[in-house]
Amino acid sequence: MTMTPSDLFPLMIFMLYMSLSLHRFHFLMILLFLEAAVFILILSLSLTINNLSIILTLLTFAACEAALGLSCLVKLTHAFGSDQISALSINKC
Image (cartoon, rainbow, N blue to C red; front, side, top):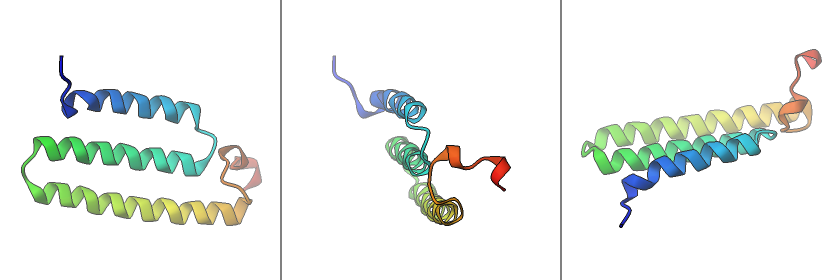
């Protein structure tokens, strides 16, 4: 039995979410897992959709999302001194 790349995408998404549940304590790791999810989505759509404009639009949104996530990470690190989610409590605001 041969597996095509489209058969591997559900397994990749499952492994991604399992990894996210194990490494959910740092903001940077969450951002990396979200980028991996977008990358898997773009790969799966590129195999099924022949329209290049949709794929380029998704890549543009992914770049904007990455820039926004990194700017939030820098702002949180400057404000709280760490990228750990536990440091971001409501009591410290």
